[in-house]
Length: 126
Image (tube, one colour):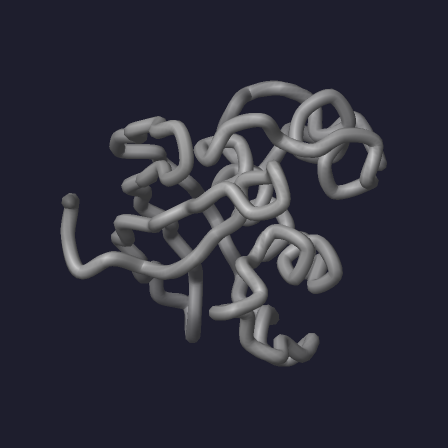
């Protein structure tokens, strides 16, 4: 991986930020880091990492064409860490047909086999 900035918006180089997780060198220790690294995986088309960080009960069978979106920016609105479940609210912008669009989601993460994984989008902040 190059010295490009990480897509997650941390301001750090990719290879010393989410690139560490996507390469398998280490695993994120918080739900927010998992969420940021998943955004990076979506932006870079890394299906294997998305499967690894998705709870098996809710993980879809993703194909390459499912993640071809041009992601442009991420903002973490707030994050609430818990012992066995955490919630992260974020906004993610993407471009489609030369127009910018926004996804605003409150995501549930749970500990699964001692690792934080994405479970599902919640209807609102709990």
